[in-house]
Amino acid sequence: LTRGYGLVFGYNERKAMSMALADRAMRAEELGEAGDAPANDIEFMLYHSDNVEASGFVQHLKLPHYVDFQANLELLRRLRAEQQGAATDAPAEDQPQEESLA
Image (tube, rainbow, N blue to C red; front, side):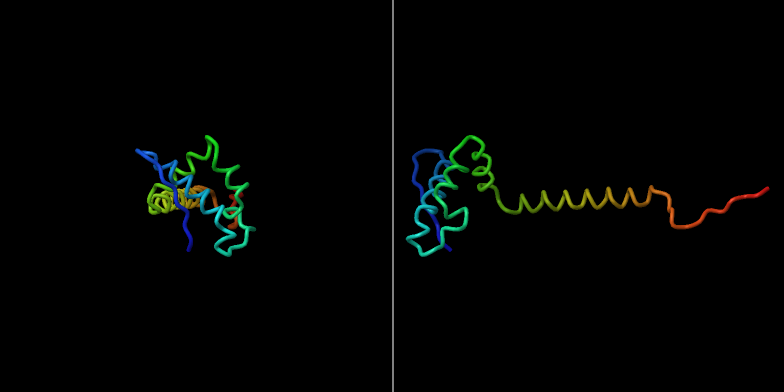
């Protein structure tokens, strides 16, 4: 497990985390890791983390992991409930229906 480091002044956690990502990517070769992974490729990392859209990704890194897992769990439960509701609402077409010949 390797880490990158970033030092900033004030309340700039996102900037420090972005600097740590850049530091980690630049030191991949020094640490003896292959550069084939996107996180180890400095150009890829800068292209995807040095823009306005990337601030959401870095903000996501600040959240505790259980927040993500809880959101995924709630989505899975909702989808299962919708699927079960659709299965009980749909008429069973497998069984033949009786016709009255009166």
